[in-house]
Amino acid sequence: MSKFVGRDEDLKTLHEQLQTGTTVAISAIAGMGGIGKTELAWHYADFHAKAETYPGGVCWLRAREDMGLQIIEFARSPLGLNPPDEGELVKRVEWCWQHWHDGMVLLVLDDVKTYDEVKSLLLPQDSRFKVLLTTRSCFGSPVKTYEIKVLSLSASLELLRSLVSDGRVDQDLATANQVCKWLGYLPLGLELVGRYLARKKGTSIAKLWERLQARRLAAKALLETETSMTASLGVTAAFELSWQELNEDAQRLATLLSLFALAEIPWLLVQGCLPEANEEALEDLRDEQLVNLSLLSCEREGIYQLHQLLREFFRTKIRESEEKPLKTALATVLIQVAKQIPQDPTLEVIESVTSAIPHLQEVADDFSKLESKEDLYLEDDDDLSWTFIGVGRFYRGQGFYAVAEPLFRDCLAVVRSLLGEQHPDVATSLNNLAGLYRAQGRYKEAEPLYLQALASRRSLLGEQHPDVAISLNNLAVLYANQGRLTDAEPLFVQALERYQQLLGNQHPHTVMMRQSLEYLRQMMGKTHDGG
Image (cartoon, rainbow, N blue to C red; front, side):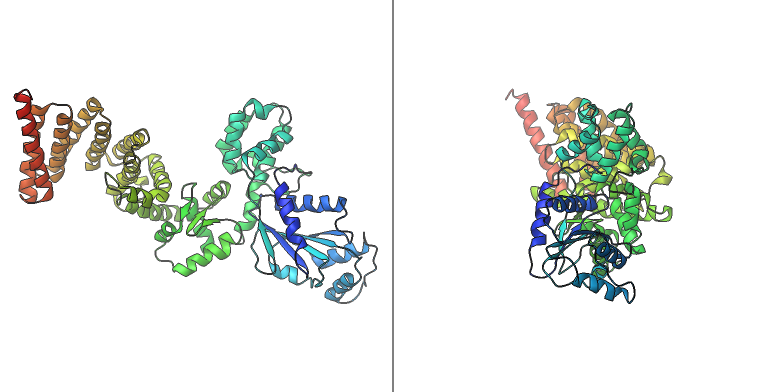
């Protein structure tokens, strides 16, 4: 039998639900594949059979098989009744209900697909009959649904220790924590890897972790069940059952969701990726299929999340012909978010984009893995840098310079790699990294980057381009910050001349540049006077 930990409160809640109501009480344990629904129902039934809570009997029915015949067989043995051998099955089942032993009765229907299966049994409207369902779906009234969750970290480790009792878990507790986290604290995954380690006495937790990372859901440790387990399927096979119940549109939606980061997903971003879809029809796919089958959880209004192993599973289902269009749609939507983040974002802006940042980071990370421009899935190559810039500005604007720096560094490396040294975005990336260093007072590191950006823009864009004026201004500000006022002055002059030519004397940028130059000259005067 499978190990059972971390479900005491679930057992208590289920029992309370089953005892309420004056007619037949029906409670359902709902949840994703591998969450431990059957395990919980079995332990509930076993505990109360031993406690004689249900003197009328505890009857376990496999919902995917003919439940009517199973009820008749249970009536014969162990109840010792003699139901008729002839006649309609419905009438024979009715006879069983009418002649059932006195006392409270527990009927467990395992792996129910639809509520119609339950109604077809014509359950007697008698409060002594308590019906417990396990299902991947969510049913409405009269079913009282109880959705079980994944285990806590402590319960996950307890489960591993119960299966691997030789101390290997605690000898490398840090890696064991990583394994639990990667499995998303899913009971089936934890039990499978625990039993795998129990069979392989010489395999360390570190070696298991290495194999899981190399093979992901195809790892042997997640595929092989044992006869003593409640579950008969490995993780992938368990997920496959639910996948096959989705229609094609719902499957496509699931694969799109798998491209988001492992974080809460704002539904507005999903809608943005599928602008051609009818809003209500898309919601129906989400609610009636993905959520209803426990493949997607609603965290709160407008916010959804995938379990990480389901995310892994859905990614394996992306068709080659659909991968690029889906990635393009996601990147396009998130780049529009990135472009809304100014260089110095306000708290209001930061709050408005916070939920999109993990997903923007996910796209940036994916771009970092591309090997050539041919692999780039953007409609406009110039948008490439925005994924990095947006996240970098988000963190820089909050003073998280250590988090922002690798983003601006990666941006420079990726743009150079995919677009080439002569692309204007290389200069922009140099400029952004230099600006971060300047904000930190790392002037010596900023200067060569500003100089490279200026040289690149002069070469690619010509002396009269606005970006050249920006580079001149940036370098002038850097020198002014260092107290190198005589080096800064001619750069401010050149930048002002270009702004006047390109934007006119009254443009805000021109006015600001003129004010900066005047302030610098005042400072130079004070310096010359010894002030």
